[in-house]
Image 1 (cartoon, rainbow, N blue to C red):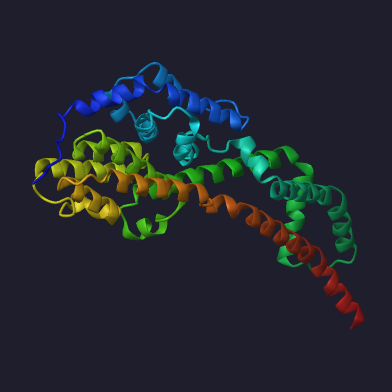
Image 2 (cartoon, one colour):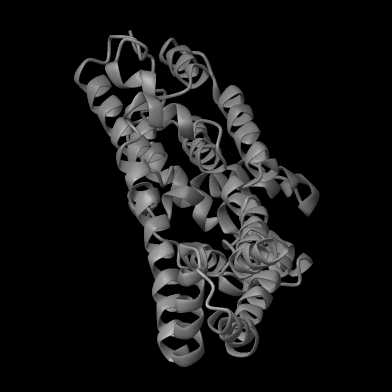
Length: 351
């Protein structure tokens, strides 16, 4: 038997309105925390501050995918409202980084990968210089000696001619290549989101930075909504919206609808429960039995958020070594293409 409604069913909306109306300490802390980094207010920060100052209605906070992710921070700050200093807000630090720090833009990516990108750019300029100045000399020498050129060298000479005589076309091809890579990355991310129901894809993404961030938002939102008396089914549905992950949102909606249709069954008996961490489902079952599980869920969410802050983004960290490996292979290819015919010439002359 569910002991969920400790408050009137809509009372949690009133409490969200109260949290927003009394959010001045949180607003001051956010501005102060942003100033500590010496950064201008990010778009995410401005959205949150404007929503708090404008006292956006509670129903929008639980339904809007742009605002729902901030509920853990807003409601947790409201729970700390009796504190008169910023130290108590230190618990929000992982959430500040998770929810409000803008992802690195183009300039941020360039500054982060300055060394490998500089090497890649230098190698491209060197290749252009070789194609214009050095390769024609080798080509003339090969023609003078009437050497039989291997396919690798022929292809390299043709590529060098194209680079030397059609630099504009080369630049267009490079831009198309960059756009193609960017499109493939976006397509890959979209496909992973849509195919996450597959057990292999789910296992592959488990423990990644993106997965940890989604689970932090999901668990944190559910914890704070349950703490203010929201119906468990509504808390799960809103947590799915806050997760910013299509798969979690879909499974949360299914789990919420299944529980609403049969509230006397346990959460673990619902088919969609297997898509979530066992600890979170166990906490929901304890809540169903009348036990306050807010502390447990908050600790789980805090753990996810802190691990998200510490977890490296593998795709970013591997970009530098991949570029360096590409440059090394390019140098090897260059030496092989130009000197194989010379080695053949020296061998024939010595024979």
